[in-house]
Amino acid sequence: MSEQTLDETRRLGVETTGIEIIDEASRTARPADLFWPWFAANVSVFGLSYAAFILYFGISFAQGLLVAVVGIIASFALCGLVAIGGKRGSAPTMVLSRAAFGVTGQKLPGVISWLVSIGWETFLAIMAVLATSTVFTRLGWGGGTATKVVAAIVVAALIVSASVAGYHVIMRMQSWLTWITGAVSILYIALTVDEVDWDAVSAVPGGSTQQVVGALVMVMTGFGLGWINIAADWSRYQRRTASGPAIVAWNTFGGALAPVLLVGFGLALAGSSTEVLDGVAADPIGTLATLLPTWFLVPFLLAAILALVSGAVLGIYSSGLTLLSLGVRVSRPRAALIDGLLLTAGTIYVVFVAESFLNPFQSFLITLGVPLAAWAGIFIADLALRRQDYDEAALFDPTGRYGAFDRVSIATMLGASVVGWGLVINSFADDASWNNWQGYLLGPLGLGGKEGEWALANLGVLVALALGFGVTLLARRGTVARQER
Image (cartoon, rainbow, N blue to C red; front, side, top):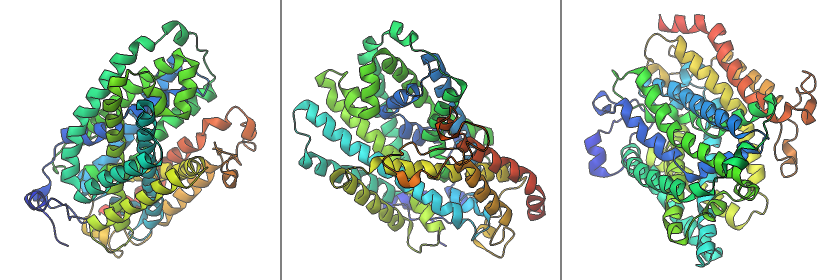
């Protein structure tokens, strides 16, 4: 497999390197470089809307702030742990995962990872198009079909072109977007801080333990755990001598800094007014825009769209790598283009055709979050057990030390998923009735059933993560030791 150097990338403008091992000469990144992609992808003002989702669990401002800080930082720290694998193996996340599942067995979590990436990034693209329509309507420029068509074309073109260009272009783009979206976010806070009513905020009543746990799981899933399956894709260009703790720290700092600040301020805004609280939950960008003076609407729109596009670019780039890891024999740019076209088709369908697609779509993605959490636990435990770097050649050889299938990891992922699905419920029961089979363990385990207090806590995500980690740490210790001998 050929390797493309940084100089060749700059000359061609497109990264052709796919899932092959990164050449030592091309591994020039430092841990601090990880700050830019993670910050740019998570500085979206859309993060303010998570405050409304948190308060809808029925908890107070103080409880919500605790949930936001702990959930966001902890979930991005887990991404940081996965990112260490990129440095130790010089390959994308779903290729490194072959060490735990076997070269062929890895296709099970690979398919789930690909579906999650495509799904979430399509969701971000949809939000960008709808945000454009909402703000154009507010400006009196018309937010109808013509606006949505143009917005869909522009958003799709930005996402697809950047993801096709590849790693080095994306890293430069993310550093620019960090300054743009960061500045607009600070201005937004400055312009709306007078909307905060601290008496109303402090009067919001507190919630139960179950409500706090439910909000915590929602925050972890919406932030770090939503990125965890692609975390090593952005660290595979790190120098082999890079510090593991530094990779975790910069990954966590870059990903968590903006969301913690934005969600914290959003809690104050949403807690100040029930009108804002209800509006943000129904129409995040539109409601946030109503608090702004007209002159700031265009910069606000641009920042909102760029931030959503930034997140989508990271996802589509990585979903293309995942597609290659599943055995699709095309170049990396073509894989990114294929996923970009799927994203575009999904966006057009939802915006112009579907009438009740978003809620079923979100239900489907939340359901996939359980096996993804189980995979994360397995991957992190497998990485923790290893004392040596990955055998890079064996990651591509079913007859090598990692084998074709690891039955323990596959069984652990399936078992943890079955348990996890039994401890979550479908939050969109009316719009996605086909998904109402979940929650079957809430009654037998004495947790009050699907109508009980623990139902909305979505314990299944945390349980799947813990089971994946714990079982792997105990059951595969000998396997990993034999592989490394």
